[in-house]
Length: 391
Ligand SMILES: Cc1cc2nc3c(=O)[nH]c(=O)nc-3n(C[C@H](O)[C@H](O)[C@H](O)COP(=O)(O)OP(=O)(O)OC[C@H]3O[C@@H](n4cnc5c(N)ncnc54)[C@H](O)[C@@H]3O)c2cc1C
Image 1 (spheres, protein in one colour):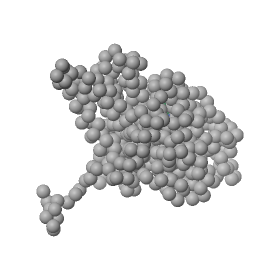
Image 2: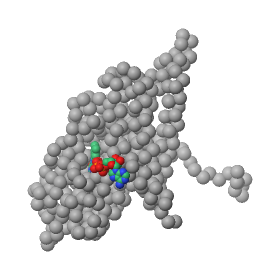
Image 3: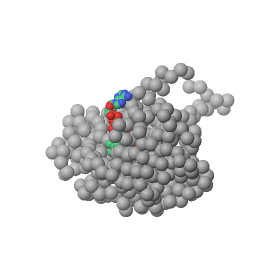
Image 4: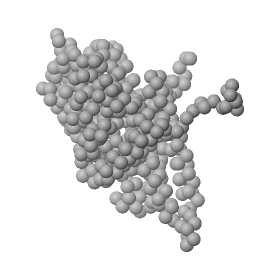
């Protein structure tokens, strides 16, 4: 191995978390223990975990991606990923609420808004007094986001907005919506981004979706009828909305990669506990070898996906573009979450497929990680494009 002038090997990569991050993770674990124990009940009752989300606000967990100048803790993407893995191991409905608020809304405002805009909205967002929602998808525009039809027509000092956004996480609870709307004819350069507040005339919450998983997280339609959006609520220049949307999704995908890690970890923990209980009279493991191999494969892949996620988060924290790396992290972690959840249901047998263990809920919650913020095939598309791009 190469050595430096003092004969010491240079340290290239450090996988250990700093003491400050370790302390933060310990605090988040306390939050999870104290506030997220009723995830099964919220799922069964299709109930939004309002108190836990409010507690997250009180404890500073809704300000990790906001700069100190605006009251944030400026902990960045790696800290946010660590936090989201912990929270999602307990309750993915709470996890997605916090992920969207931090990774999609706060990050976007922090990067693209003016100082005056940040001073207007951050005081409410960092405490959780207001929750944020990210509104890109529409009935005919999911993977193909540039096909969106929601329209914002300039009329003097405001835009007149009309359209409907679909599948919006936290739609019925959020007070601030980031809306992507068409301001010009060009498919990509004709899209702009806006902040729209829930209480404005013409803003409505439409139908609430009935979902396979994440049942505690309300997913709704957002209806916009002749909404007068002041020009000073446009984010960035006219026509750069698509760039903002895609850039923000790089960070969002890290949030969903972390959600997937948490879900995978919860499934692996169930398998571990189940197999560890299978012992002979001398305490030696008696679990079948195929089940042990499954556990070993999942545990190895969990560490692999976690390192992919940390790498992309560190790049983003350093201001380096990480579309390929973020897509790799999400692709790998979301596939793992689904594989681990399926294995947990199989290995736990009767308890796995019923409400007798958490495995059934974990399997339902895992499914979405391969769909939103870019379906699995879209991640593969992004990665392939990154790999084949001219140097
Ligand atoms: C629970 C939930 C919460 C959501 N929250 C939000 C939110 O907060 N904000 C928001 O804006 N949206 C949200 N969405 C929408 C989500 O981002 C879209 O569902 C997702 O982008 C996929 O779009 P689609 O459902 O229209 O599927 P489609 O775009 O129709 O894709 C279906 C499948 O077709 C394939 N496919 C499509 N295009 C291609 C292609 N070019 N190449 C290869 N394969 C392709 C993929 O396999 C994909 O899985 C949410 C969705 C769900 C289910």
